[in-house]
Length: 101
Image (tube, rainbow, N blue to C red; front, side, top):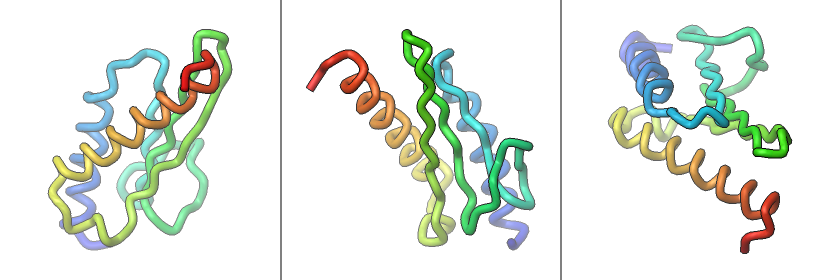
């Protein structure tokens, strides 16, 4: 992994953590060679693991990979992509959990 990409991923990790203010959502950053928590599994691409706990205390997880075709994009664009994925995931879970369509 080149230095430019490492720096971009470090910045992205910081921005994603600061953007996630929902107490029901846990963000685990799994960027090999940059930042990787113990709960991360080996992966071909850097990824974010989202854990969402509903009011009934059901735990749901989603992995959002950041594939190579996204590595050259602006940090803001990647952050918006990941944030959108998180919001959609939460909406899907809430729809199933609470009967919405």
